[in-house]
Image (cartoon, rainbow, N blue to C red; front, top):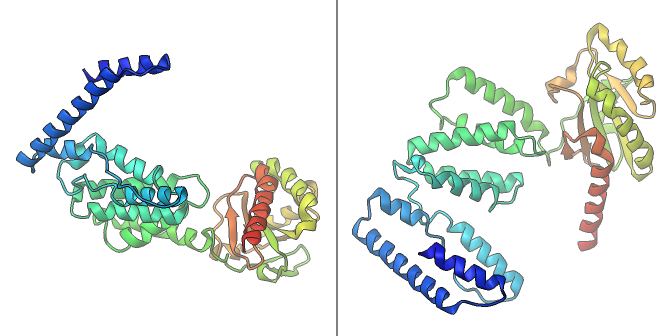
Amino acid sequence: MADTLRAQIDRAKGKNETNKIAQEKLDELDKDVKKYQKDFISKHPQSITTMLIKSNIDIEVPDFTGNEDSVKYRRYYFYKHHFFDNINMQHHALIRTPFIHQKVDYYVNKLSNQQPDSLIRAVDIVLGKLEGNPEAYRYYLADFLNKYAQMKMVGLDAVYVHLVDNYYKKGKASWVNEDNLKKMSENADDLRPILIGKKIPDITTYEEDGTPVRLYDIQSPYTVLIFWAPDCGHCKKIMPNVVDFYKKNKDKGVKVLGVCTKSGDKTNTCWPAVKEKGMEDFINTADEYGRYNQKIRVKSTPKIFILDAKKEIIIKDIPGEEIDRIFNEILTFEEKKREKQ
């Protein structure tokens, strides 16, 4: 009946007309359904059917007063704050229902800002509501961990580190064996010092003649730190972009510190490769002992960081092909921020 009425209303709209009779019938039908649901919930408060009905009733947002932006802001935060009000997050059957996955996905990925701090807050809220529901809690904690461990979006490794530090390492995932917990902890330990927004660990690497170069001694509004290797195919592909970027932006306060990752007797292969790739204008270094790995774990190359004057990480793990565009977007953002101050 409802589908038929909606079709009649849609056909009328298509002709720039209104079908008042169909709309009135649909409104009346909607009232009947809501009354039936309310009566059923009242009579059978503990049933699975009640849980299903309540979970699919949307949150009623009150009317707020004020200017348009203020009203939108307040409506959004009210809706987000009360998003799970109609869902019994403690029900034992929750994890087997078709709606919970859609609800959690919408809350985390659509309703929440896709920035690390906001996502951390969102997953904490979901997991907090599930703490008394062991099966659902275990599923979502593991699901979040796996998702953010594999997430390629820049900066979201902070969510993974947060989950390891605040759940797994604190004994809130008792099902994980010691070997897997050790691997998670080591991975989080590698990521933690190089999260976006943090001051990158200071490292010292060496020029071809043995002159030490301390990262923190490089005085520049922006420092691009790039770890690369002579036999890295992707390094070879992107290096012309990085070289071109430096030529175009060196007058904007940019310096590039290149760290060749070859160590031992292979360190000598770095210097011919610098010339071959046209990197002579960079600050080119290496370390035959790979000591920088004690502070910045480099598991693959190329690995690129853009740092500010304080050596805080603005962005990392960006495609070399996009470095010029991304850097100039950073400049534009910083300029707009200064204008607002």
